Length: 73
Image (cartoon, rainbow, N blue to C red; front, top):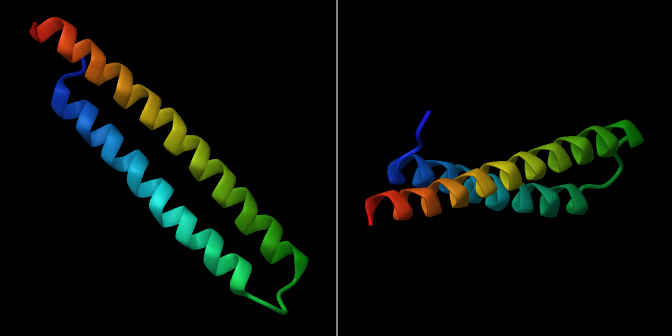
């Protein structure tokens, strides 16, 4: 499968969206009080997994963008 520039932008957009939303989620998690430990553990795992997904999608997006520049030149 060959990724085009439009695919690269979609991947990068999703990665940026994940980072922005989960950074806000981190702030909300820090501001909460009086929750059971399981609440913090579960939400921390969700945050870590989604930031890893964002990193992977961002890396794919950058690679797809670079590859599309090479093939279009």
